[in-house]
Amino acid sequence: MRPLTDAMPKPLLKAAGRPLIDYHLAALAKADIRHVVINVAWQKAQLLQHLGDGSAFGLQCDISDEGDAALETGGGIFRALPKLGEHPFWVINGDVYAEFDFAQQSLAPGRLAHLLMVRNPAHNSTGDFALQAGEIANQGAEMLTYSGLAILHPDLFSGCEDGVFPLAPLLRRAADEGRVSGELLEGYWCDVGTPERLAALSERLKNQALDRPKSS
Image (cartoon, rainbow, N blue to C red):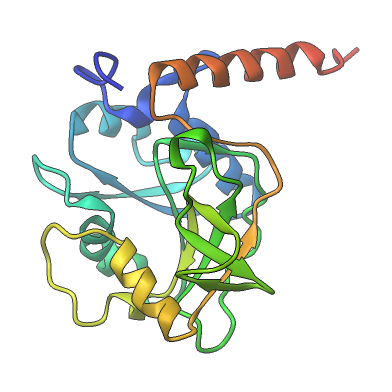
């Protein structure tokens, strides 16, 4: 996303005049999720100033500081675990946009993760995981892309240590054990990974706003 992120963290980039993170926070509040833990690293002061204590969004926002260098997804979540508690929790990547109802907040017994999958975008044509009858597998006839949205159980991170590490190997190990469920995200989704995709998302959101009927 450079040069846009040279002086700004990715979650504060604006789509249709609104920071990306605000769309996530609004969706979580709508689903009656009130406690949110946000990982910060690059340009963290800007995020802290924007979020405050979360009350402006109808939320309680706790901050998990990854330090000056990001810990990757796995390491970042692991460091945040003491703030997340013992129950399953939603994980939402800060650089995606999704139209989804986050009301589901639980995992089936024995599951370590539930992944939201999407049809493969052009920039990830080979996909990440297979989904069949609600089960996630590492290989299959049709591969799909992990959306960056998931419900995870803290036990997924058993044996991990504080530091830099990715999430994918933990998911793949759990999938091999038959402990990962999934579903296809049918609503609109965008990996906001380039300035061009951010511009396309902004255009879509502006058009949606124009299409909404005006209140009398």
